Image (cartoon, rainbow, N blue to C red; front, side, top):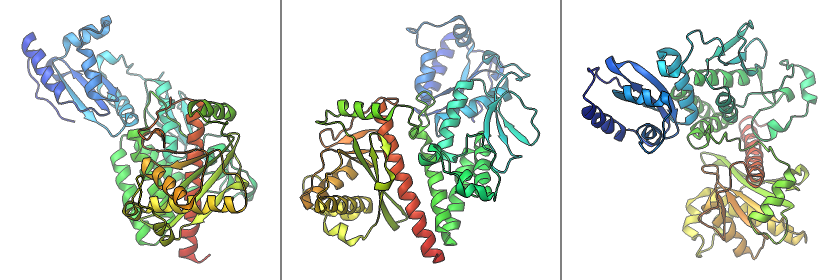
Length: 465
C-alpha cells in the first residue's frame, strides 16, 4: 500500500484538484480504497469491484448523498488504494484493514465481539468451515471478524469452489472402513467437495487444502498461488502426475476468482438451486427449440501439458444426470487432425494448432458416428465446454462426417456466455436463471468426469496399477 506524505488541509480548490488527480490513477479493477483526512488519518475503508467507478460515485454531485456520506466527503484530503485479484480478496482485505485501522466512518466496534468470524474445526479429522459468533470452542481457529455476514457467506460459497471443503455435519473419521460404503452427495458431483466421507480424499490432502484457505483468509492470496505453482511443478518433476493435476486445478480455480468471484452475483456455477425440469423448460423458450431438450449431452477435454489427453461425455435426462450413459474417450490424436476440414468455420491449420479443438472434433465424430451406426437418436442438445472456437471445432467435425445433432452450443467458464451457431457473439443469460444453472451443471459435470478419467490414466501410467 502506498503511503502519501501527510500534509496540512488544502484550500477547497486545491483539495478538489488533488483528489481528481488521485481518482484518475485508480484502476478499473477490484480492490480496497482508503479515504484519509487531516494528518493522514484513515477515515473510511471500502471495497469495490471497480475502484475507479466506486470512488467516483462519492464525488458525483448528481447522486443524492446521505448525511454520513456528505460529512465523509467533506473531510477527505487524500485517498489510497490496494488493487486485488478479485472482489472476494477485496472483501477479505477490507475487513482486515477495518479491524487494524479502526476508521471512524466504518463504525467498527473496537471489541468486535458481535461480528461473525470463520471457524475451522481443526480438532476433527476432516475439519468443517463455519460462520459463527461463538469463539469458545477448543481446537478451532477463528478468522475475522467480518462486518457483513451475508457477504461472508457468499465469499465462502465462492471459496468452496476452489478449496472444496465439506459443509455437512457428518462425523467423518480417517481410515474408517465404513467410509467405503458411503455414497457421495451432490456436492461431490458438482465439484464443491472431494467426498472424504466416501474415502475419496485422504485426511492430509483435505487438511492441506484447508490450510491454504486459512492463509487466503488472512490475506496471503498471492503467497498461496506461488506455493500451489511451486508444488505443482515439483509434483510433475517427481512424476506424481495425479497430484500435479489436482494442484493445477486448484490454482486455476483460485486465479479464476477474478472472473467468477463476484460478491454481488454470489456465483455458484455448480449449484442447482432450481427444479431441473424448470431449467429444461426455460432452455426450450430461450433457445427457441422445436422441442424441449429432454436429453442433453455435455463434452469436455482434459490433459496436463498436452499429455494423456482424454475426452468425457455426460448425459442428462429431464435435467438430471443419467450416469449409465456417460462415456470416456482416450484421444488418439492423429485421427482428429486428419478430420480437420478447411471451411468457413475452422481451417485445417487452426484445428492442428489447438489440441483442444482437435480432441473435441474426435470425441464428437466418434460419439455421433456410433449413434448413427446403431440407429439411435441424437440428444436434443449437445453442450461443449468452451467458447466459440470449441463450438466451431465440433460443428466442423459434424459437417465433415455428415452427422447432425438438433442443437449445438458451448458455455465458457471464463465469462459464462452461451455460444450458438445462430448467435456466435454469445448470449448472456441471467446469472440465476434456471436455464443457465442447468447448463452450468452439465458443463461442470463433464469437466469433473473428464478430470477423473485423466487422473486414472495418469496413475495407471506412473504406477502400472
